[in-house]
Length: 120
Image (cartoon, rainbow, N blue to C red; front, side, top):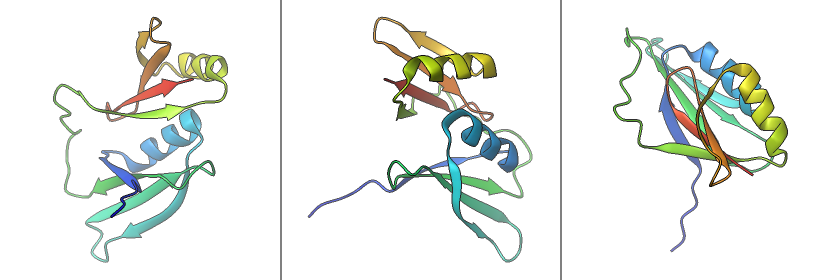
């Protein structure tokens, strides 16, 4: 039996703000969406042309505050073919939240506080 990772879900407070961030910071585009007939939720799947893994952004109508991410001891990693250019872009965006030069990596944070690791 084999398994393949297909997506990871992040619940987001402001769907458009999150979509804009993921497109600008990581080049992800909307691939598809599901909307509840009663308007209670919208799910947007964001991805790239590099692979078929998707980031699922879920917006819930009844959520009236930003999500509590606890200690944020989890993250999704992205590999880039131009680490220096990515670093400069994220520095300009002001979204770098942690750097580990010894390991050659850094983290950015999205509008909801999710950490995303950037690796060369």
